[in-house]
Length: 386
Image 1 (cartoon, rainbow, N blue to C red):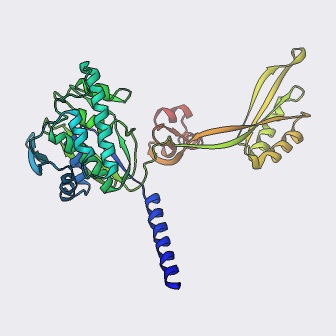
Image 2 (image 1 turned 90 degrees about the vertical axis):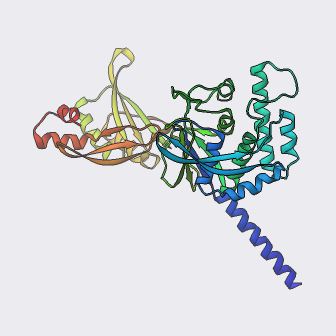
Image 3 (image 1 turned 180 degrees about the vertical axis):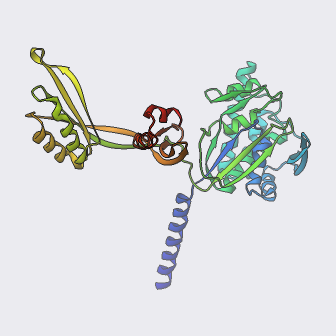
């Protein structure tokens, strides 16, 4: 009895460990489409990231078709690169492709993804050609290499443990009508490469990927080439974690305090501002307004955090003539930023630099003011020469 209980505990512990590992490990891949993409290029980029060709062959044998895959050399502008070479004779209609995949011994998830890709391709091709039949032959997508590329791509992603796919803008040169339809709503860069830069196979494999231009720590990467031209290549970056593609924004809450003042000497505001900032005010400013009986007045506005509210309130009551304040809580979005010191002709000056995709920089006023006094030049000259 003790032994059985011990075994059950061990199995439960092992299951929890495996489950935790599967949840916690998130791998991402980013495809930078420099000169375009084709199905074989995408698949070869996964091989460059560590997906064994032997495993690819073994899994694709589950389709129960005769084929072979080898690596061959191609030459672009006197540069020799390798690519995938598929050997086999096959050209199936849409329904026969679905039957081939559904009856194969590929894992269920792989079968479902491949079938879904062909279903989408079928609907697009039928729309383009105005076909009303339930079956027809694709121009290229029914051939063996296309079937192997689509199935192999999903198998490779699974083998490498990739959970998230990201892709850059699509460089479009001489695209087919199918590619246009597949990429509707995606960001593109029109090009004039002189060759078909994005094939329908690549388009269907990447159309659901998160599309962004992003920055991340450089890890493992691979490059895959096409045979069209020197520019015909893509780079695949493998990240051991989820790529943070959200805007670099911080969110918090802030209190805004307002009070109308019409019976105080404006000269006193200098002292009020000093006290406010000394007690934690994030920002303070004054607006001129006209109040009842056309009396000129001021609206004192102060922004502060929750923890500083009482101190700020007491400063306003102690150092101004007001008998009351009003305040509200606001949600606030702020760009994340770092301070970076840059060497300039006026010495080192700190710049506030935000991250992508809202990348911008701004010199710190206090540093510029110190430099202006040190070099005895107008402050505007400092800004002009940064």
